Length: 288
Length: 312
Image 1 (cartoon, rainbow over the protein chains, first blue to last red):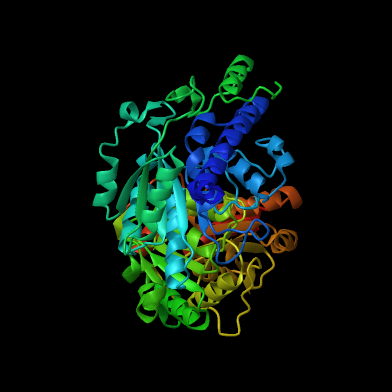
Image 2 (cartoon, helix red, strand yellow; image 1 turned 45 degrees about the vertical axis):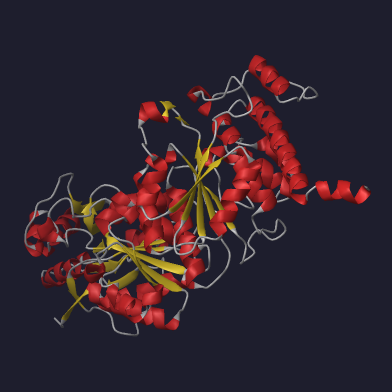
């Protein structure tokens, strides 16, 4: 009897529950942090949460005690404005002390408004100006190929970000150099700073565009950890082509009044909004 | 005068030789490798040569990524497009990230003369030297080109290497001591100092010779490293001569002249005259004709020095 119960609890389910709990924890911390400092980008940090957690807690071969380990997998946050979400994960994993999170965006902090590879342990590339991350990632992946190394390079892109020309320059190069060790994950939340992507610069059939540029495209639900697992596993089997995971997400995911709203790209969270958000995230024990 | 050697040929050869000695060197080019001569490296080491097509920004971004894996990328394109197309990855990835990437901008100044204003590069020094962590080097002869390539490969950090399309006579012999950040006095003199960079060093030497004939002693400094500037040497020249004339194939704004004036202004009260291209868009034409038209001739230098020697 006991044996049967244990068989029913799959290791994967435990892992998924753990990661789901982490996502919720980070969403609470994020709202609290950004409310506290009255600056930063909540919308894009909330939409990318499951993608980052899945990568950092289940995929990336990294060593927090040795951030420069030569054979580590590389993670590059193209949409650098989601830095707060990344910082919370890096702190949780021990790249730096959690206490440091409070200093985010403040003078003399190692945690800059956008990722700074020089100041912050665990940050691979200084990003923020959109489009640079994928180009950087293409370079890293070329090096890995040249050196016959097995590490992979993961780049997270925003859907507003892919409006930048350099993204398509990089996409063409990745295709030319057959970078099957490069996985780009599109945090496709449909909303950019000034409005929806449809309003500002409609991107048409994004998957078809990347396919036309020679990429293997996998569509996924960017808030479903199991579906992300499926997509990332498929990516591992692709040969001779770079992979784009077109992950459908919701900007501001988890906080109802932020969901799908462009104003939450980078708006300070006031006291009332903070209380509402924390209530939704089940974080009653947090103080204002 | 001895035989002229095209700087791009000297550069291509230097890159190829460096590649033979140092397996970490990788070379990127944006479809101009036959002009930049990075093709000389590419033919020898195809597995370390990346032609990324006409996509300068991506080329700079890729190089930044490569450098984080221990490679020493040399990035090649026309200086005009290095500056104007790749400025963001150069600043945000390479310099902000303090990465070991070498940006070789060829056809700088007016040297791509017939292609006109869009291909002339007269604002690159101003931008590159204003970006923190960037080192800016501009060479004046084939020997210096080779030594500069070797020196910047040794140095750990982002470098902008400004190269000309022009052929230049050899000034230095193999014994020439090229040190990053240290200007080279190529002719001693006591009345006025001319500080020049790139091809203008030759024009300065020509002017200095003519002035010797009329009894004016001109010191000529080859300021190959514009950043970090050899302040010590600039101050010494300011103290030992009546004034300084700077000469560069660049806008009068923000280049070598500005760098020298910044130092002199805060340390020594002597006049500084900046010779460069005035605030204007330039035109197509024969190279030497253009240099003359825009006031970058030996004669223009001679006039300025004469004025300074008389009235300073």
